[in-house]
Amino acid sequence: MIKALLTDAQLKLRDEARAFVREDVPRQLILDMDAGKVTYPREYLERAAARNLLGLRFPVEYGGRGLKWEDEIIALEEVGVLGTSLACLYSLPSIVGEAINVFGTAEQKERWLHPVLQGKLTVAEALTEPRGGSDFFGTTTTARREGDAYILNGQKRFIVGAEGADYFIVYARTNPDAKPHQAISLFVVERGPGVEVQHVYGLMGTRGGGTGRVYFRDARVPAFNLIGRENGASDIFYQMMIPERMTSAAGALGMARAALEIAMRYSDRRKAFGQKIRMFEGVSFKVAECITQLDAASALVYATARAIDDLGRSPKSGDDPNRVRRMVSESKKFATDMAWQVVNHAMQIMGGIGYTSVYPIERLLRDVRLITIWTGTNEIMDLVIQHEYYKELGAQPIGRDVEADAPDAGVDGEKVYE
Ligand SMILES: Cc1cc2nc3c(=O)[nH]c(=O)nc-3n(C[C@H](O)[C@H](O)[C@H](O)COP(=O)(O)OP(=O)(O)OC[C@H]3O[C@@H](n4cnc5c(N)ncnc54)[C@H](O)[C@@H]3O)c2cc1C
Image (cartoon, rainbow, N blue to C red; front, side, top):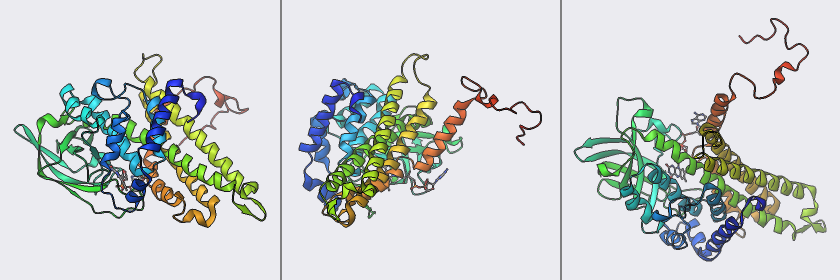
């Protein structure tokens, strides 16, 4: 994060997050997770909670700190250096918590948000189905009302934390006849009868975070567990996409920074042809490219965080929600593409040793490959970005009509569009 943008309180928060990452996360945990020896690192979340570092944006009464997005991205970047599994598990209370905090009742917040932020309960977010993740509104998991409960049937896959979660947040179709955006509801589904988790994947990276497949077979979910309105989950989905994508974007900054630092230190010591490799343009220009991209991504993520924080202000000063949605997607796309490139360059700078387990670059590379795919692929981000910008553009130019500044701008019959 760019230091000039941070207040003293934010610098203190950054140092708190750094202390957690440095002191509370044993090296062995990271190695064991990557080796598949850990199913779910529950203690890690308990330690983050003990430092009051989970769900920083949420109200103090529910265990948060009542901070803003501007603050949360600072902690997310620091946790990002741990790799995708631990960063994702750290982010889940923020993602799932958004739905409960914004759309849940006080009773629901007390029951499901507060204990998560205290490290007493763990969560997972179950959106993706075997039939596809991008086409979210095509969800085929169903929930049928039966008395004071709903009966859930369906499957979700690739769910981080599934193996250790005490509850899942699950979108299901509650109206088979309605249009997709008016057919889906959101539920808290506690682990219990009718809910089965299977460990089925060999993952390239992002290991040890309990990623699994979740089956719902006539799972009985009390009506109390419905978040928001029945058939009204599209609003919740769009709201949740803010933390979903901002957590990926901010975590990417940390991963890229970590890899780049290792490669830069290496390049300042390693010699070839009698001189340090950083003296070769092929190396130092890569470093320059990486650090420029990293700073650009930091600035975009920070500006987006401010725009989100600004949403609640008066209509005049508050930003337009559609523009913010675009910026959130830009942040996710730009920061994750940047991280992939930076980690890849870091490996190239390290030469052969970067490809081995002597340095963690190979693990970071395996991890970072995922982040352009999850929380909405970067192609889906492109869809959102261009869609929102076309809407924003409008028929009239903003400010000066530059189109008219051409010698033949007014010639009859030349501006033909069909
Ligand atoms: C390790 C791991 C952890 C994950 N964690 C979670 C989790 O915790 N919770 C959760 O719910 N999900 C999770 N996911 C799922 C992830 O979000 C999805 O994989 C992702 O959204 C893409 O969905 P898909 O795999 O079904 O691909 P598809 O939707 O089938 O897409 C396949 C390809 O088609 C492209 N495509 C699809 N539609 C369009 C379009 N309209 N325009 C252009 N291109 C398009 C995509 O960009 C992609 O390249 C995880 C995935 C992995 C691998």
